[in-house]
Length: 299
Image (cartoon, rainbow, N blue to C red; front, side):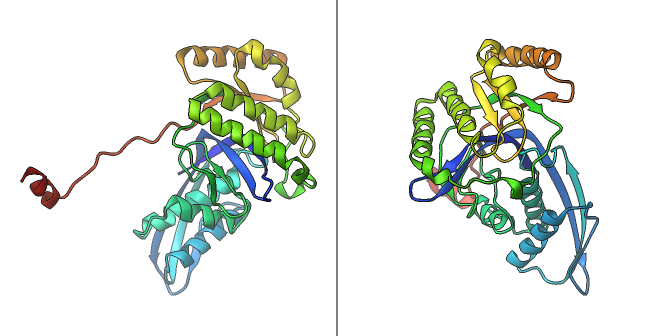
């Protein structure tokens, strides 16, 4: 499995030239199943049409785990739209790499998945736990947060798509100080455990991105955000989807449901309105100690 996104919380470049993207992972994504059997040469069967990223991920993973000649039979299931800024390509890559590496008993770490994904295309940080800040070119983390906010999201998905290669961020480095301040504000919001302040920076980042990739949706929903009870607006910086961010509380869920109904009534009919949630914090796994460790503790 690999989760998709509702665009990005933030995206920009720092004064030292490091690009960064802050993901907005959601509870829908991609599932890939891989069956591996012996064969005289490496072959891949069952790839869906246009799945070049999926195929490249399988071949790169096979090299990484030093897998010999084999036959891979693939099943692919996706709940993500392509060309909307929902990280569908990165999700294909991560899910495929997870499936194959797990199938051969050598599951890849998050950092390994990030480097593998970045070697294929500029990547989102969906392989990391929760909301992450990472370098889309290298996969390296720009920030490692020990907390991140959770949101109820009302997503608005337009019929238009955007090819990643068509997006131009020429001149973005002139705003590097602004982006550095934005990232610092996200750090401060994490330190205070302030979901509202974090969402405010998502709104700001979307506004800055209008100079590079204008959103077909943001101007329709941002003026309504406060009256609907939203904390901010999340925009696909390389894509077309956008969403309203609501608190992850009972009241927030109620406000999100009401907002979804209102937007369905007032927005153009060709805009799809749906709801999602950001990914929860990881479930803490119990520590399993060996019998020898337990005996020594008892002694």
